[in-house]
Image (cartoon, rainbow, N blue to C red; front, side):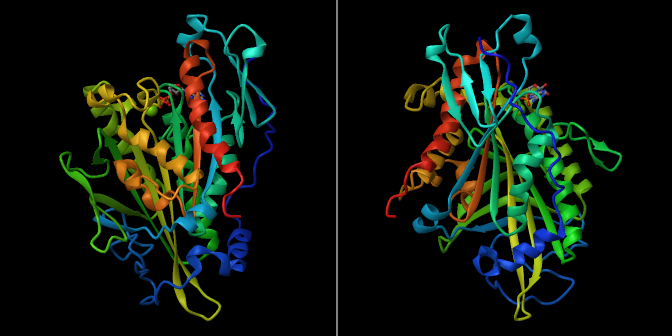
Length: 428
Ligand code: ADP
Ligand code: MG
């Protein structure tokens, strides 16, 4: 009989992110770094002007939250060659403990973990039918929010600060802990994040800590978007009816997101406020519409601009982005099956969730066609998926037998994103 997930995880605290060693080591790697090419000369301090189409307006570190913009343009310079060489998808699993309902219904634990990377699912009465999967990391119920953040997200925040476009997805069946993992407790705990805070609050505080240590000029902005039934809604805007639209930009280099607010934040508390207000807005809407919270995606994006000076003494901007995505419940695709036309017509299949899987598989398969255009989510994240980007999927699961089918489907999806990357590369 499988025992409850209990990987022997060392609780040794990871070093706090943001040491000055980071910025030094990044600078010593200047030539390899994607953002370390010179973007353009800057007008001079204290204004940091926007140098690529990531942003549509100038900012400065003293900008306040009232400064926001409704239209942003993103440039996508992905070439197939870049995609095939640099796509890097990290996949981890987080298994919560059994919830009250699962205990009450005496639904047994069918998940066990060996070491830090393997997870075994007991699919039947015989050990012979057990399925074992390997991931980059497996977290059991004893893994707290701090551990998941430090091990999984802290390194990704470093990459975002270094100029990469990074994305963390929470993927899994409704009720398995996606929102807990991404947001968790979003309250303010006397000027910092709460004990049970998830990834977004922690990333905001760690980011500002690290930026202060770097002692360069910087600006940080946030956007918060909800995607439901292939329609985007801005979660920052006070205007409930405002629609957010995605267009191809005229010279086909990227997309334009019209109607999306991007708020400059001068401290992590302002970012936390955006998360709190947006989450509240979402909950209010979710009570009106039953399946909204399980069928919608939220994307919280932090864009970081840091002014750098090259060895020739010229100023340029290092621009990175961190997308933190709480996906719709994976049951929205797994039960209906990808090709079930009738289910799709009835709106039972979540187009964005389905396409995300295809895009990730195309990226790890090094396919020449990446179907970004087939859903709003993948269009929205197009500049952060593939090419010089970092992606992490946190697959959340329940340990209970009553969810076995969904758990296997989640692990299959997650392992597909992981295993294919390990195939020998073509053309090499
Ligand atoms: P989802 O967003 O995937 O639908 P939630 O994040 O809302 O699921 O989690 C469902 C419930 O389980 C919430 O009450 C949440 O607090 C709790 N929960 C989820 N994961 C954990 C965990 N790792 N530790 C403690 N509680 C958890
Ligand atoms: Mg949720």
